[in-house]
Length: 120
Length: 120
Image 1 (cartoon, each protein chain N blue to C red):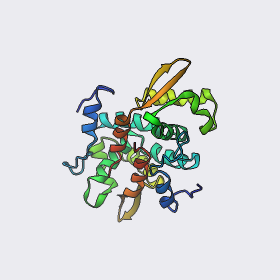
Image 2 (cartoon, chains in turn green, blue; image 1 turned 45 degrees about the horizontal axis):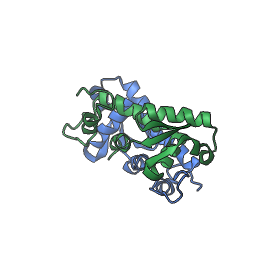
Image 3 (cartoon, one colour; image 1 turned 135 degrees about the horizontal axis):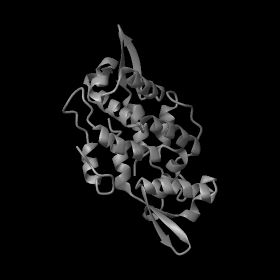
Image 4 (tube, rainbow over the protein chains, first blue to last red; image 1 turned 90 degrees about the vertical axis):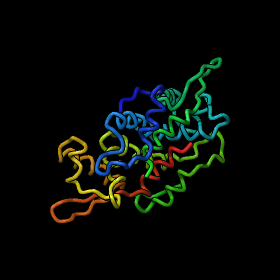
């Protein structure tokens, strides 16, 4: 199965990582799809980024201002920006400028893709 | 919340990654717990290891012989062994020797921990 990278390939990838044990002994996920999911999981597989996702998930409208992150995380703004850039690059957050600050919104469908690949 | 590394800390970690948005603006997962989940996700965040987990999940009893993996993955036994070692190290698979070959069994609870950290 050939799929395009996100965001256009989301529907196809979602289908690819659904449970499918039809062919015992072969992987239910192709190497190409596994590459895409692995990139998504790598973006999440960092303690600071897991904490950022947790904060965004628990914020009203699942969105936060970049200015509200350094304090609870106990790290400097440039480091926060570095991690936010990786999460945006993976399509897990979207970025919108509002006045002086950038706001970040969770893309729950994208996080669900990574989660579904880990279903047992 | 202080937790021990797996396997003894499983119950506590499972609790830590449950949804908990009680304190808006702070992360629902502590840095210590995030470290542990990140290590688990890093072990999974590789295309070959995702494929291995898929094969094991779809095998009878959720267990496979190491000898049955090179063919469907299209990679050599030493490379398969390298990836299996990482998955065993993360507690996602357990290893048991049976005669000439090693068999690997999925630890679904451990995979669930990683998955729960990605819940929206």
